[in-house]
Image (cartoon, rainbow, N blue to C red; front, side, top):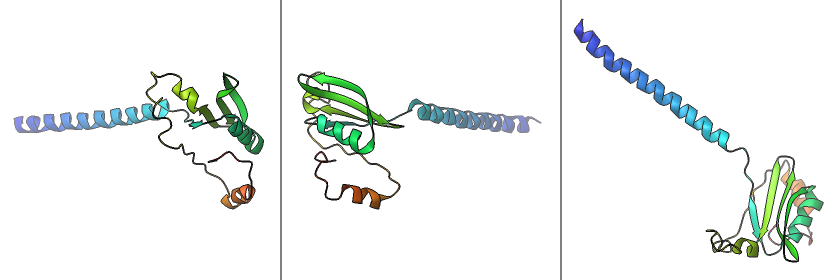
Length: 136
C-alpha cells in the first residue's frame, strides 16, 4: 500500500502544479489583454495644421484635443469612431528636455498602417491630389 501512496503524492502534486500553472497563465494573459483598451499613434510633424485639415476634411475626423504652442497648434487629437490619431510638433516634443524621447523624435519617421475595405477606391481618391500633407 505504501508504494501507491508514494507514487500518488508526486502525481497529485504534479497535477495540481500543472492546473495552477495553466490557470495563472490564462489569468495573466487575460489581464494583459484587458489592460490595453486602445492604441493611438502620436505622429510628429513640423506643423500640425496641414494634418488637421487633411484628417477632418478628407476622413471626417473630429478634433477632440487642441494644445496651442505660441501662434500655432502644438498638439491635437482627432477621432472618428473607434479610430484616434494624435499629432505633435517636433518643437513641442523637444520642449521638455527631461522627456527621454525629446532627442529621439527626429531620428526616424512615423508610420501609420490602416486597413481599408478596397485599396483601389482609396488609390483612386488620392491619385493626382496635391492637398495632402507630406508623408501622408
